[in-house]
Length: 76
Image (cartoon, rainbow, N blue to C red; front, side, top):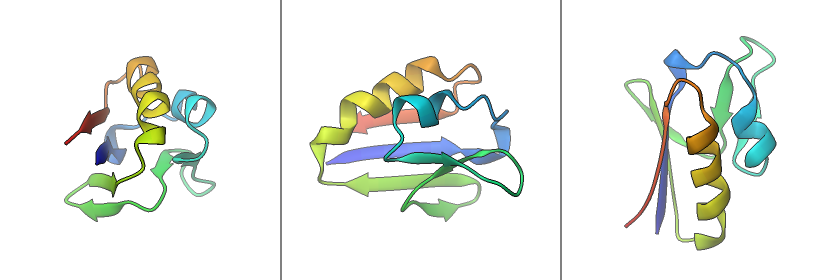
């Protein structure tokens, strides 16, 4: 199981996450911030839980590239 979390409110719209993990992230046309696809929102934390381990590496790369460190990725 892979769990990816995005603190969307703190996003600065740099687009690194979309470049590194386009299947999981996209930029919002409304406010220019990142959107974690298929995630649930709970108090500003957008969380995606999936049994698909194939997304782990690209999400970790997006996490490392994020200049404001608002993405977390872990295997549980």
